[in-house]
Length: 327
Ligand code: PMV
Image (cartoon, rainbow, N blue to C red; front, side, top):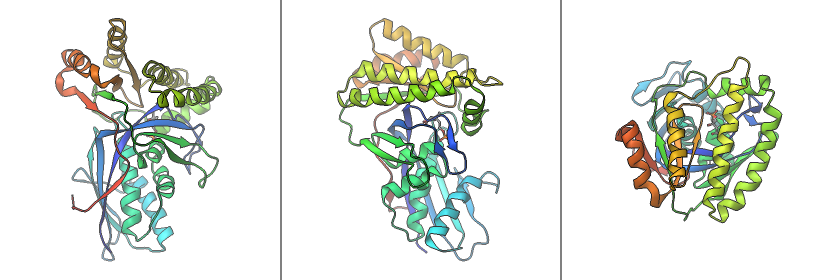
């Protein structure tokens, strides 16, 4: 069968997904809204090959063990089921994202896998079906099928839980500065972390209300390109998500000392007149939402604090695409 290659970009949630209603199907407790980023992406090639006796998964030139490739094989099984084949696949993936450091490499990885594997198996899935398939690998991957601002509509079952573009072509001159404060794998996976929050944080019911309010408020603010309102919402939404980690039993946190220092720098910049806002996912890395015109001020400040090699600048990025060249 032919090889198919796909590229998907990662996304940063402005209104976060934090908690599953169905852990097997990955149906979220709430809807969420993200911005796809241009700088961080995954290229994945998939070939179904009759000669293979098992799926082979190579990520960043390293062969994954059957345990490490469990989620990838799960998505391949779903594709095989739809395509009515039992043939194993060779999957080769290159991540251009600091893996598992809270920059959501799983989002770009499973979106690229869904696109490459389905096409390699001869399926022609529309973007809704691709979004549903990507969801089965990682929740945030649901949104990486689309570019720009994307909403993952929670739905209530496999058929109704998928992302839709909210504003795919972004003309607003905004940027996201990613501070790589710790490039290592996170200690509490997002799966474990969100499950602990759902089942043990007394604040979880309040979080569901927060998300509903934030989604309702952020959408018109995005359309109006109202930077302070979008920034204020995404910052408070992130802090309220992280309050679910601190209020879990046992409590845990994704922040490290540098995360706290970076958040303080954002507040200092703001007090000095440079509007910018922070967000963090399931890791210590801080992402700073800013206006493109302020990038020199902001990157200089963080380069002085953490080193220029730790300061990465991204802009709104595109949805999933298929590539013709092999990796
Ligand atoms: O897709 P997962 O299971 O890695 O969960 C992602 C969770 C957050 O990144 C913290 C929030 C989000 O909406 O992306």
